[in-house]
Length: 404
Figure 1 (spheres, rainbow, N blue to C red):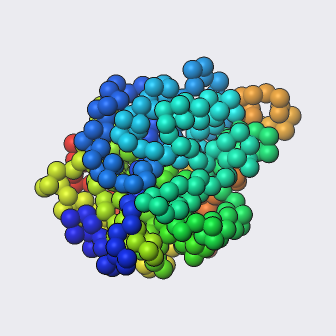
Figure 2 (cartoon, rainbow, N blue to C red):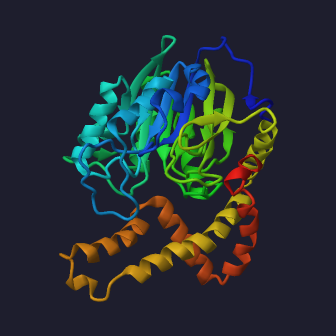
């Protein structure tokens, strides 16, 4: 598979219709790259798509007013959106766990900034109804419906509150079925999963496949900050995570690498998948060189192999949960103050409870804690942890040795 980073599933029936290019998380922050230069070296690949979609994972507010939450409150200068505009992206995915980091007003300001630069937005809005509304697109005369949802962390939209489109599987699957009736092609973009885990959880894989069965031709997930595998499932393309596109806040092997996605569509959906692997630093995104691409190809094949083996996926997730489920749970329990129920007006005490709140409401966090506690119950923590070295072996790709 992935001959020259291209996987062709069949000859295009009726010929090639159009291409869709998708990219992972972008959060420029205060990085020093010039807007026109950051994505210049991958710009040709991006502009090869008739529809060009990017995950925009940051507010762009002039005045920061961080909401109470667990995890960081991100922000980027408003002109940082020029990075994706200059590269040719036309659509910004906004369903994520950071778009609401500065409240509803920050969501509205960010949407306005992106739209003023000619980008269409989906996955966030002034109300819940607006946030979950699909975006109607056209490519080569064909109708395409794009839906965008995020796991339930912070900054979610409500009936009268701006925010991100929350994942609600039964409703979202019904929306997908309706979209498939009203458009020729459907793309579902999600934001969820376990940060730094090179494999999706069994629940996330099941969810992505359910969207495919509901009528999505392409299911695209972000959030993990590391590359994950891809699979062709019942004629639909699933991308579990391409990693970050440009998120120069940190410098780590997996954080600073990823791949761009290009899907070729024919009359029946995706017939071809192309990937462009890259690395990035503070100033720009650089495609992997010719000598590095065979290493990426082998890496992707290793990532994809377990996706067809449910038992293997279960065991890999159990192994992951033995470490990170334990860490999450221990960290939260340690932070809960004594007599917390007597000081609910104290912002510091409430802030320490929000980590616990996130374990219950975020689907991926809940998955991991539930899995870890089940392993405790079954006295299988040590047994499950035996696969941790295999997972760790994905943490330092050969072409990222300089970032170890």
